[in-house]
Length: 448
Image 1 (cartoon, rainbow, N blue to C red):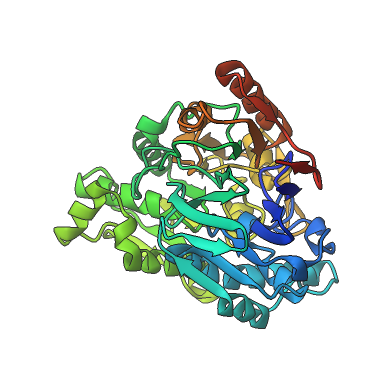
Image 2: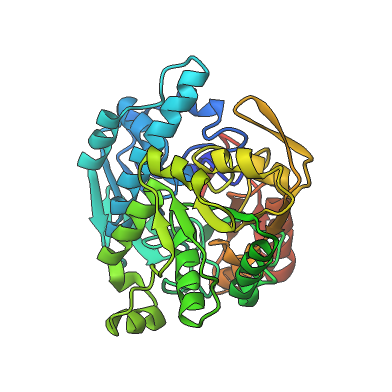
């Protein structure tokens, strides 16, 4: 069995792996590389393999750094089937449609053809099949099963058997406990594992205080008379925030000021969440059975149209604005940051991973000015990071998840993290488990 790494090596984005056995190739994830741009230039390069040679693609979850190049794959000649959970399939269609508009704008700015168009997304969805967790599927010599990754709604760990060997692709693993969804499933044994390392060198110290820290940021900004900006990923992070704001309001702890959800994608995804209530954890399921609307509260205003988004400017501070993209590298949040980053009364709250070279990372690292739409914008507002809202497991959780397999593991490949983070986690695995662990290189092939 041959494993080749075509992405997710030394970077947190761009996951793309191919397994080959007996002449059959299957792929795990086909994601966008994302950093300083919404989609980095390497996404426009031809694939390093023939897409027509791949029999099937298995998708771990619906974030663009795991699905964003699927339309390009189909355009390149892929004619197999794409598999994921039903929820991931539903969410992916919305994510790709929204992405197409942002990619088109970026392509126009750079005078290049778009990566794909709406018609290409429909071709992808036509060959995409939903699976239940633990519903096995066989492709040639490969027997594949999906486990719940607890990362975002519908996310999966990919468990594959072939040639008498077992290999596990972690996808992205959840930050336990999640406010909304069920916890990550463990795998009892495997010969090989690809484990993500987005936070392989860090600990989410504030997970138990995330709601408290959010409340503190709101109170502080409202007392100052400013605007609280939250660059948020439309999938999961936004819904976690809405759930906690719902709780704060129910407890009389949310000030009676407007909260704007300025993201058409997040609005649509939030509605779609209701279709997949079976994925919620027991606590949330019980709340919903009691008839409580967990993702809404008085004061929440949604902005679908561009006109509604622009009208937010006319509402006097204090106010909260939740908008994408989550790394401030595109989307509506840029228009609000353009306006309010220079305001010392305002604040930016980061609730997720900020990739290297992204504007979010620049702000977190103390940039005094940033470039937005060609303008140099001074940064005078406050910044706060609430890592507890990350949907990614931190180092202790990653090691705890891997420990269930340590008795059988022959080798671990550390992927989907920046080089330093991946190397740190690899050393922890070697020292703690006595198992060979390495950080693979781009286009590297290994025989299992």
